[in-house]
Length: 215
Ligand code: HEM
Image (cartoon, rainbow, N blue to C red; front, side):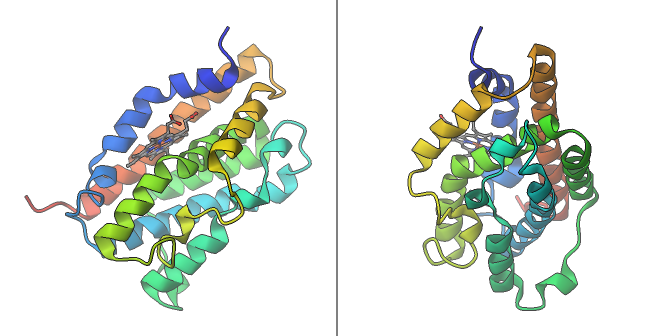
């Protein structure tokens, strides 16, 4: 049987293509959306990472999810710097979650609270993606909206404490392969990963409605 890291990757491949090619992901990136859309997207990410990272401290000692909790991944502080840059020091006052974002963040919080193995699915979907395609998004955002390379506005995509992302991803896949879960639980994690991708696509769809593209 394939390793669990290969299984989860293959199982989510189709949805990865869908997420990657959603209008909102491919178009900011194609240059037709303005920086306001990017700021709104960054705000949505804040809610998701707040849910991921608020639960992390307690989960650090959990036998299943604990090994995945790595402070060098934490993104909330970087997001807050980006939002200060994008929205100004009062960014919190204008922050609001789209219903799709609320649903996503609630599901992450629910897993963090009650199902550590499910939390891993959300952790994988976001952090491994940020370490991979996130770097392409950063590059395009810098070029499209003129952010300083790896500076304010795109700090979310910069993992200051991970010198070698490729090596980090390899060790992360080893953690996945050693996850303390039986085959049935692994299937459930894969299903939750698909759900995590669908929740992301839901946020992109909602943002696409808020920022329709002029032809
Ligand atoms: C423009 C948007 C995106 C681009 C260009 C992109 C691109 C990529 C690339 C090049 C990889 C590396 C594949 C490899 O290691 O061989 C990757 C991996 C990954 N991406 Fe994306 N991606 C995008 C959006 C997303 C989104 C929205 C998510 C989910 C929220 C996501 C989740 C992942 C995950 C979990 C992996 C790791 C797969 C694995 O190795 O197990 N990506 N992406």
